[in-house]
Image (cartoon, rainbow over all chains, first blue to last red):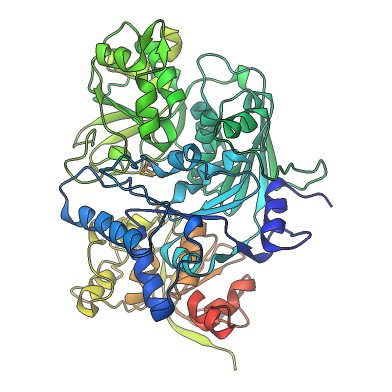
Length: 431
Length: 185
Ligand code: SF4
């Protein structure tokens, strides 16, 4: 019987010819990623369990990005970064990207792609639930807890259950008013927040083929919102050319066999789809933008690993160009490289940075910022009574700050259009 | 000899997320200081909405007063148990509160792995919905090896899904113990 891409990667990483969903296998891990929130407890468990002989299994395969709680005066948060810094110094780690230095990169999932850690056919684990983002590169990537991460840190191995795969096919040509965010919010509404638990979500179809790597990463990023173990998209020319820019040319390209077995299959025609939001307080609380249009908002937020990539800002700039925002609007580039590109990429002759400043947006430094609330002094954090429309990935109560705030998740087009009017607005009105 | 867990059931609904299990504001306590560790038990399941706490009746606190140990040691849950963040403090808090096993219809993957690999508690999956047939406070007996649950209050027996490959890790008391026993580390 045929295998899916995910099954093929599992077979390779476990040294087997074939694997079947449900079977548990030991995987050789290619990259372990951690950050300032889960890194310190992972290191503590690793030291405790391995004791005197604690050894990092492979320094080159450990990547550490401080990104979550970093531009803050909060002492516990700063202590966490200090622990990482000390650890990196003690063990002479080559892939530590310290904040406050020119090595600082920004949000881990985007930095992994930009720094060349996402290699097709490989296995990447991270101490963050959105580690599934890297799957856009035809690889297996997923989040784990601290004990698992500590185990990988010492051994380079971890057990994992081979997931069943679900197939999502998007046919048609993407209309200008839709982004990958609309597609994933549609899926979430259709399958709910546990619709993909312990499964791999495989995306394909002509609409995916024409998407940039960054748009693809929006889809794989939110696989976890459906409970998914991973999201995955097969390598194609778009992937190859992204990697060749980084001088990466050697890797395994896997594709799903035509007789591979899927748990379920969903087919969409993007030309018939509409801009979508997830209403408070769950990412599967789907509605169309046209249905909720007119709902007042108090803040607009464009940022995070989901919606703070250069492509997200290009969408937003399309709408904000030559116009003024009506409510506080935050632009939070996911990475330093995205921040730099804001000053380089142009639309109608103006840089995106000029467009956003002229529109009256607040432009923040790269980090997770208010995507997960964070300490009280975090930029863009929601306060009591706020109604936020955001390009981020979660809208549980309190996720962006106050439990007394409501968050709508939407595409950068919809958020930008809503910023102009102070109410949820269909981007088609401005395109 | 097969290992049994005997005790009182505490019944919860669907989508019990890690914030309901241990709210983020309590994650500041040290997990290595024995006194501070008790706080995790004290606040375990403290954010479950009161009407959903201890079904079918609701409003049955998991932890009474200042205690950090619950009178209930087996949790019966619905689907998607443990969804939300990847925090390992969630199964830890329940372990500190005295919980030995959870029997839910399904789990969020990271919570499931954390429970097993951290050696905090044993997560079983039921074959059918149990939250309608077992009541909070029922005396239950769980046989870990044959995956059978007996509700002694009603004399009903339920066959649960086998633990499969995680059984050995559960038996060892966590991933590191397992690995040491099998000379993996
Ligand atoms: S931007 Fe948000 S979702 Fe992404 S890693 Fe940071 S906190 Fe997590």
